[in-house]
Length: 140
Image (tube, rainbow, N blue to C red; front, side, top):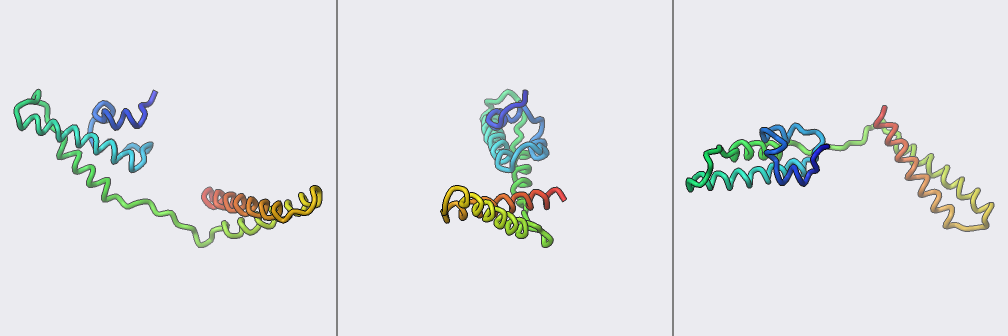
C-alpha cells in the first residue's frame, strides 16, 4: 500500500531518507514535491532551533540539505508544451466538424428541422476530431 500525498507531506522523513529522493520521485507533481520539501524544511528548522537552545536529542538537522533541494526544485524549468509544426490537430478538428455537421443533418432529417442539433453535433465533432488527432500526434 503506497502512502497518500498528505502522509508524505506530514511525515516526509518516514518515506524519504534524503531530501534529494523527493525530486527523483516521478509519481509526484512539482507542487507535491514543493509541499513535501517545505514541510521537511519546517521540521528541520524547528529541530535546528531546539538544538540551538540545547533542547534536542542530539539528532542533526536537515535544514541546509532541504533548503538546497528546494532551490534546485524552484530552478528547474517548467515543462513546455508545444504543438508540432506537422500537427494533424487542425485537420482532425476540421474533419470532425464536418462529420459532426453531417450527423446533425441526418438527425434533423429524422427528427425535424433544428439548427441547434446541427450546431451541437458540429461542435462535438470538432472537439472529438481535435482530441483524436492530438492523441495520434502524441503517439506517433
